[in-house]
Length: 149
Image 1: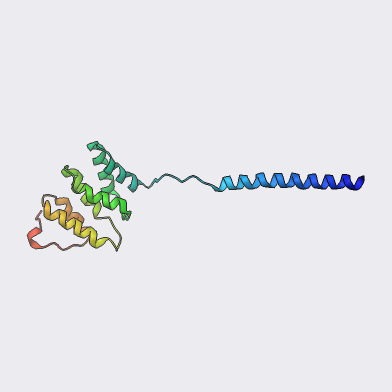
Image 2: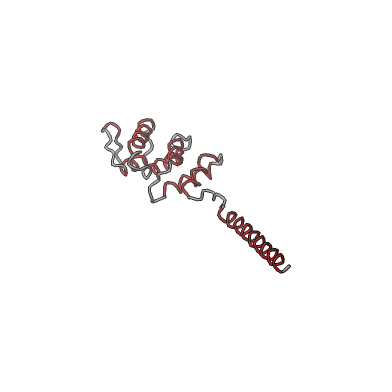
């Protein structure tokens, strides 16, 4: 009888240990699953504001913040938003986006950005701030497109 009592006690302890370890594993699995964090990079948020909003004041604020951002802008979505906003009907937004394009891109995208800036400059020579953006990219403009300040 003591032998069967001992076997029952050992089996109970084993089951109890297994139950505790399985709940511990489940808790570990749950703690490992982290929800995806929303995109919080300011450049991406300003770009989304610029592309999605219809309020002209919010667009101007987002374009201004992008133009004042001092680090290189390398996100593809931001660069495509800047290119599309350089064709905006508001001159101030176009100027600010052109200024932001001066800080956009990495080495692989410099020629694409240069050609977009030059094309915009050819189509709308009234954008004097675009010359500043082009000078940041060290682009030499032909004489017929230069503006004297």
